[in-house]
Amino acid sequence: MAEKTVEIVIVTDRQPWVNDAPAEAGEILNASEADAARLIELGFAKPVTKKG
Image 1: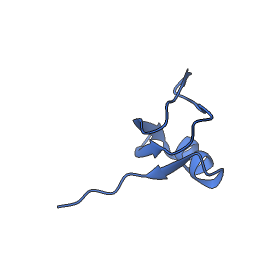
Image 2: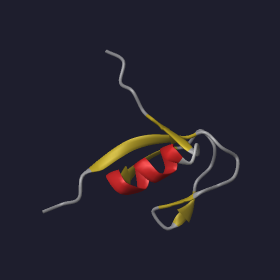
Image 3: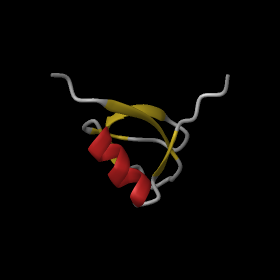
Image 4: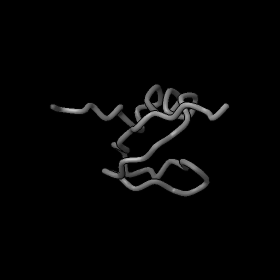
C-alpha cells in the first residue's frame, strides 16, 4: 500500500530537508503525512488549501 502524501508549502528560509533535498521558501511539495505534520508543527510549512 502506498504511503499517503500531503501537499505543503514551505514558509521558512531555513531550508528544511524534505524528500532528501533542501526545500526553498515558497516551494510546494508532496510530503508523507508524518513529515508534513512534523514540518507544520515546527513552523517550517503550512498545508496547501485548494480554492475552488
